[in-house]
Image (cartoon, rainbow, N blue to C red):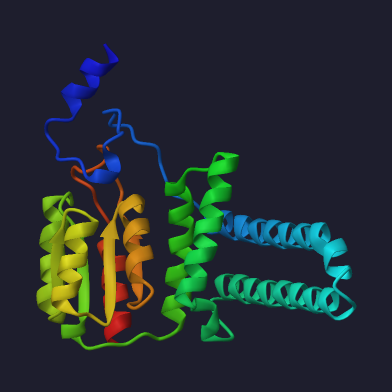
Length: 259
């Protein structure tokens, strides 16, 4: 009976790759989450990483001692330096998220952000927090930090990526924003199409609207060389159909990028 209900609710939409496991229910779980969720897990992840590194050093320390005085001292210094740098970077990241005033742009080192994101996602999965909620929380922080960096570009180098499932009204208003600000805009059905459009447009900044799952996969691929400002859509009818977004927020992001 449940399978029949699911089938009855899915033919009117084309599901993206990230939603093939959807059960057909329209009452999708809300993923709206405070940014403190990601920050808390980021702190916990950092502590776990330092503890594991310390445990590894403790396990191999007797063997290091047998190599003389210099080797164990060197490894101890490396461990302390690793821990200090990691804690300092995390404190700067937390400060930037809370104050919206990053002291340095080093907190947005893309590869380091991706590593932190992967570790937090793994920890969240272990304790039962969905990746959609964690992505939602992460994007709130990342958008704030990126916005405080005063990113600017020209209209022809700003790309607005839209999902194919937006409501007609939101599509109409997005086209109006495109025409008003003379920016580039593309509608994509997933990560593969998005990468093609990005390669064609060669933007300096990307504003992307999608579900958290698509934003997460695309963010990991793109943010290492192009700043990505991501906005999760809302899914009142479930995924991949008549999704919506706060158009005013998108316009604010466009104006901020174009200054």
